[in-house]
Length: 246
Image (cartoon, rainbow, N blue to C red):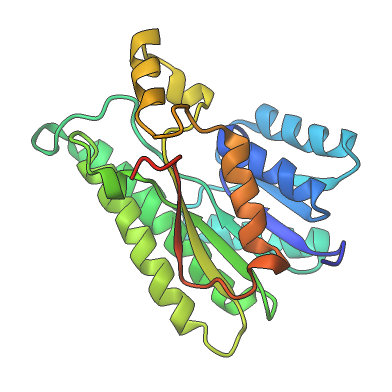
């Protein structure tokens, strides 16, 4: 891979997104660290990448807003000249997930806006502005497979991402752009652990046959593989990264 490859990672100010951005920077990519609101955390990711010898910039954009996504692509091209890789990590999952009958309109609309429309907005632009031979990785969830109660709307938005991705991969025939999906199981991020008792965390960690929670690096390594040369024949696939949970 050439050192001039450029990657946009949405929702990269913390958690899994931050780890993906830092991992791709170590792989030699110039990285656009997208964030929605927390500039300080995004700047910290950029600083960490710089300390490790990489090159990145932080760009604010709400992926649910098509105009802001266009500005994100503009800024990426202005800074680095092109876009080779897009990682759609930005997503929302409320800390309290009621059953479908108790889900309010605000929570529903927010998950649809960020998880589905946000991914749609970036994919639509990528089709026109990404380099020939580009790579796209969209983030889903293993909830699509486990179908746990309380996750109906969230799971539905991610199932939509999987379907869009698989069809989009076929629609890009002739461009040599690969589109794949990573669907993590429970990952030990600050956001995931917040509000859970030690007993609940222990129970969740025992669910996969490998008997541990995933780490952000587990996801980042998988994304790195899917945007790298070793996965050159992998396209239109959903890869569940969950320790065998489902």
